[in-house]
Each structure stands twice: as C-alpha cells, then as structure tokens.
Image (cartoon, rainbow, N blue to C red; front, side):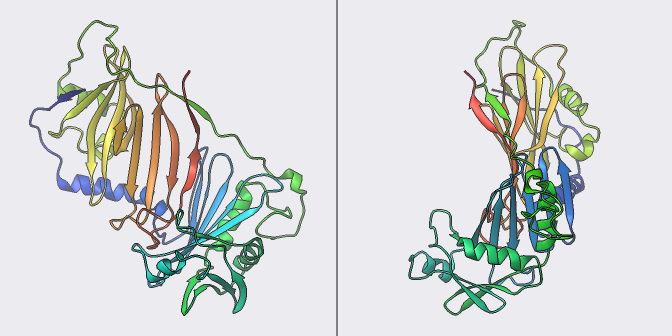
Length: 377
C-alpha cells in the first residue's frame, strides 16, 4: 500500500461539499420518506415510493413491498413487509416489525414469546394473532389467512392496526395500491388472477406471468498485493498527476468529486502484476462521506476506470458503500463491488426502506440487485 500526499493547493470551499451532499440526497432518499412518488427503472431492478409505501424489485424479479405508519405518526412506528417472488404460483409472505430506534416496552413484551403476540385488526375486525415474535430477526410473521386479509385490505381504503395489550400501531394504507400495481407490472401480472390489483378483471392466464430470473454469477478473485509489476518498475506518480488522470474519468468532476485536488492522501493498492486500485476522498457531507475508487494500469497507457465516488470501505478485493438517508441512521443505502480479476463488478445494491424510526440501521433489506459471488477456482 502506498500513500501519496499532494502538494498544497486551493482546497474546495465547504459549499462544494454541501452541494455534493445535497446532490446525493435525491439518490439516498430512496431510503427516506418521499414527498412524492418516484420511480427508477433499470436493468438493476426497480425502486418505487408512493406516500407511506415502497416497493423494491431486484434483478431476479422478486418484489418486496414495505409499508409504514403515516409520516406524521412517529409515536408508534410500525412496518409491514410483503415478499412475492416471480412465477405463476408464487405465494405472498408477510411480516411485521415494531419501532422505534431503541427497544420499546412492547418489544420487550414480545420477546417473552407466545404469551404476548401481536393481533391484526382490519376495519375493527380481529384477524387473530401473528406467529411468535422472532428475537433473531426482530419481526413476527403473519399467518396465511392474515396475509390474504391484509393484501385485500391494502387494495382499498382500510384501517389496519397491530394490537398488543393496550397499544395500537396503525399501518398506513396510503400508497399501497400504487406500489402493488408497480409490483404487478414488473412481474408481468397485470390482468392475471395472481395480480395484487384487479383493474379490468382477469384477461390473461397466469402462465403469462414472468418467471424468476437467475442471479448473475460473479467469480471473486483475491487480489495479489505482493505481485511484481510486469513493467519491472516501481509505480510512482505525483498527486497532481493522479488528480488530473482521475478527473478525466468524470464529466462533472467538481460535482462528483469536489475534494479530488485537496490535501488528503492518495492510497494505492496493487491488484495484480499490472493493475492498481487508487483511492482518494471525494466528498464529505453532514453525516456521510464518499471515497473515489479507480482501477488503472501501473504504466502507460494508464487508462483509469472509475468504480464509484461514494465508497466507504475497501478490504481484500471488496468495495463497499454504506450511506445514511439521514443522521438518525434508521434508513441506509448499500452497494458492493467485487474484484473479478480485471475489473470491479457490482455484486449488491439495496436500501433498508423509508426513514420511519423502525430501528437503527433500517427496518428491512430491500435489494434491487443481487448476485451469486463465488471464489474463482
């Protein structure tokens, strides 16, 4: 590992860092409470938010729908997760998690087991108790009958409550039908009997529903930090040269990496006999930081390739990015990349849901991109 400290230069003003932080917020707030519906569709999956509900469908076409209490009801935080895989005969699984960031007396009661289960009430009707609260996962699963009743209730205005003794947590129905329709669309269920939302009746057979897609397979290659350079030369480059090289990989370097030319150290790791991983601080926000990561040759032509400007860690061939949606840390966005021998390839992308005080670190894992990472033989 080599550390290169740049010469003193004009350090970017704080306003640039704040601009960078604010520029990131629309991305990070996919895990935050949205003020309006947003949609992002790409080959990496779908992430759609409508009012108090969010749906994340990954690249295998598994969809996860998470709902919460109304945003102005922070006293009794609650979240429900619906999971439906692709395929004609896929079932819907449902579970519930109570807030808030610290263990409440309700959670303490539920940890006692069968004596204290949550009950589901829909429009005043008691649908019975959930399964036993899991201390390992911090949630309780709904029965199949409760799940069916809950899904039906969410397609129309309904009062949905989770009850424990004298406490009643109310799950919002606002936005649920919109995210359900989005999940139907992603999985090719619109117009079939397996759709969440029946818009115009059944017009297609369930056989037309999209099948589950396999997760891409990535071969993870352990870097060789002690490898000898094929050029037989020790890599050496001034910080100003590195900054100029890496700046050329971005269309808007001042926005994407405003700290590129500041006086923080450059870190260079050898990946193999001819390639290097180069790291430098890119931006600093109120509660997040981002490091730039580039792969380049150790001799001309250098051909630097940008991996990300929002990394938060690197360890033995794995790059991670973990960014909070807000300072409380109750919502987080994650990305991971692995070294495959010639390049870093994205292996994971997810959020933990909306920022609704369910628990520190976020309520759920809502991936939009997953892979099967295997060690290269």
